[in-house]
Amino acid sequence: MRSHCSFTLYLLLLGALGMHGKHALAESAVTSEAIHLNIHESATSLKEAYPSRFKASQHPGNLQFFTAEWQASKPGKVIFDHGPQSFSIPSVLSVTGTASARFAAEHISQWSVNGGVSDAETISHDDARKQFTVLLHALSAAGWSKVIPISRPRLKGEQALAYALKNSGYPLDPSHDLSLAQWMRLADGTPWLFYADHVFLEIKLYRDPNRLDPDKSGAYFVTYSLTAQDAYLRGYVDDEKLDNWKMEFSKESRSAVSCLRTRYNRCKEMMTRTINGHVHQMAVSRGEARSATPGQSFRVKTAHLPLMSTLFVHT
Image 1 (cartoon, rainbow, N blue to C red):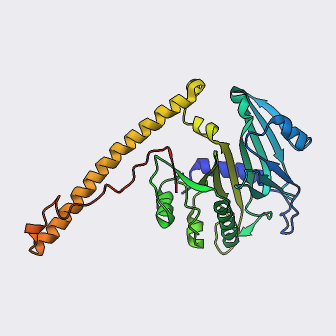
Image 2 (cartoon, rainbow, N blue to C red):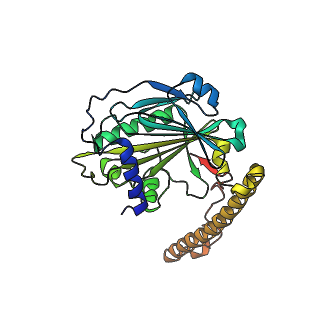
């Protein structure tokens, strides 16, 4: 069951799509001009490239936002310029860049892009699944790697999906193609997390909770958050410690690794004892007790299991 917060968020996103209008968006909607964006772009260069497209606004906390919007009947297209890892985002409804005066040298360190799976207001759930899968494959082909926060287990494929269905916020494996049945089970805000050359990309999927019949059309909304590595990692540091955020982040990451190493060693010890005990019992039942003592010939070898030593793990 979706939480009240997820449902409220969906309504806000639904409004942005213009899905409550009197006229449905035609299947033949025409995409407007493409715009190019990149991390660390200056406000000056953005204005020079698109003098009338973006609106700048100042907000509390020394943050400056740069926003562009498109009509639902004529969505935009964003091309994120990132060297060999460049890619395009179709069916865009809005874009917001964020710059912090506290870290002025970084210029625009985050882009938030919102849009649909397609230009149409509604789309069959299976077509939405297929189009979204194509996008994930394109990102992987361009060199974007899946990453997992160190606090989460390293899982792939079906195991990652099973865990995500029970643990909200766990990033799915982009290399695992979901079946339609699996696709329909995804919760609002299901994320995919990528990394490429000092930039994090988080994609989240939302859909209309009133249009979930797999045999009928649904309505989808997708958010893309592109964040420079330093800006992303600062999110793990308290505001009052940001002046020395790299040192503070180092402390936090070492603490996290130490905690996980302790948990890992405990789990490894428990696993070794449990498996060795079962193997010993099996050996006894076969009359092999003299050559099958726990901790010797049937000792479980777990030394090869890797310890996670960074905050994010590439898979």
